[in-house]
Image 1: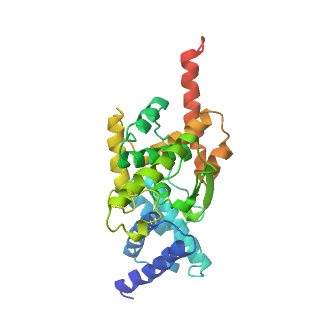
Image 2 (image 1 turned 120 degrees about the vertical axis):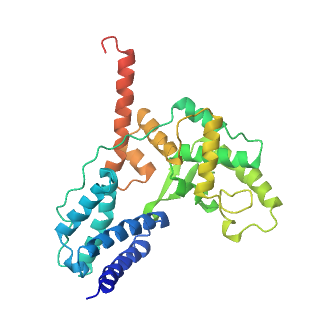
Image 3 (image 1 turned 90 degrees about the vertical axis):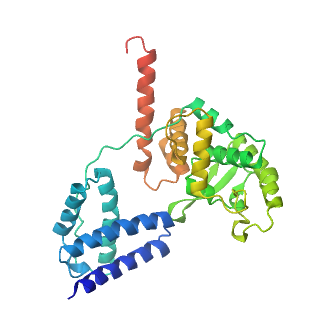
Length: 310
């Protein structure tokens, strides 16, 4: 069989799996793109080892691919992430009877030490929330978005993709659609509610009032740009960096740091892990448990500073 046919056979199976992830599991476009990159790299390497069909992939081929990743200088964390995509692919092949065995079964993921998430302190959060001001439509929008993200711990994709019918300000709730389109209601406090009300009734209306033809696709978007279109992740990331500089935060910042800070501050305030898991929309509590390590380090530091025999 020609090399092109080998690539085609594996490529067809990969395309089928990606379609399954998109249609059946509802993965977000960015997640799908990451899966496609990882699987394409894997398929290319396996084909280069002379594999003719997906069913012919064996454990030694997977191990050889992982070794190649290590030789390319990829970190254990990145290799483990790529292996998740490959495991899912082979489980799919077994379900569809396209392979007699799962060559990844029993294969251990590369060992790595989990990185503790970087956080913003209470004073840094306060300075960041105040940085945009509320004197302009853009300031009202950015204040509302910052307040929402810190109040709910939502992902940046959940925030910029928010529709107006997902907000229930009279009840102090927002309906967030997380990974796999799994929905969850998350409460908001008065500062976030007030900021959102100001943005929706003043700033957003003012922007739309001076835009001749606002994009129809953004008509129900909560957060829009100054041209009336939906605010993008990239646009918000740039704005967030500007506000961080204005707030005197010299460290690198990302929208995810607000999510990390939300979770850790809840745990430090006495919230239980299961509640934080539900608020974050984590399917597995082991994902949430990393925040307990952050809280433990906070407690150790408090002990060291204040206990007379520390």
